[in-house]
Every structure is written in structure tokens, then in C-alpha cells.
Length: 152
Image: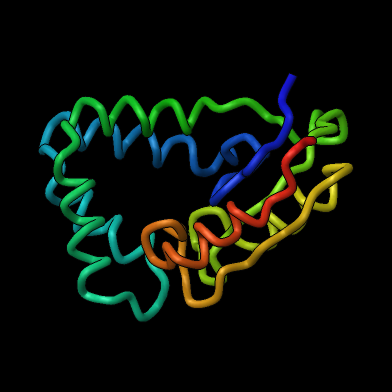
């Protein structure tokens, strides 16, 4: 059994059908052209509107260190993820749902709905952050983890 759960910058919904082909196209482009174009497009989309230069550099370095094959595989895995909204009500562990205020990839509305569907959930929206809350606001992210209810 799970004693405690943190769901950060994620969603319970399956990939919308209109986005599945775009993900397949992205995977194909990664395999054909490498990661440079993908990283250039991904980094600004993944971060909040005013990221520190050090955060941009860190995420760029992390993403650039991945192989095109690994990125393509991850992209296809996201495209094929299952729908889990119906199972949220069965999760009885204390759950912390974290999302960035400006998350364009898993928007706060999805996290708000996910937290509402979980029986024992708290929602934390990290101001100024996008999809990479742990990198963008590491102190706030860590504090949330430390404050999260753990089983006795």
C-alpha cells in the first residue's frame, strides 16, 4: 500500500486525441533530426513567464543530455498513457498535488480537478512557476514536500 503520495506537474487524463498525432510527429522528428529543435521549443514552454537565467540553463542542460531516442520514446509513452480520472477516488493515501501557476503542459485547472477527485488531497499552486516547479522554485517545492502529511 501507498502511505503518502505526491503528484507534481502531472495529470490523470489520457492524452487528448488531437494531441496524440502531434506527439507521434514529435517523436519522428526527434529520431530524424535530434534534440536541438525540440529542446529550443520545450524549454520556454515548460517554464513560467519570467524564469531565472540559471533555471533556463539548468533545464536546457538536463534536456540536452537526453538522447533523441529516449525523448522520442518518452513522447510516445505520454501519447499512449491511460485514463486514470476514474481511479482517483480509490486513492486513500494522503495526497499532495503540486502545479505551477503558469503550467502550460499540465494546467492548474487539471490539477485542481484531480485534487478535488482525490479523497484526501491538498492542492499547492506554486506562483510564478510553469511545468518544472521543482527546478523553478526548489525551496518552495521542498518545503511543500516536508510539510506533506506522512502516515504515523
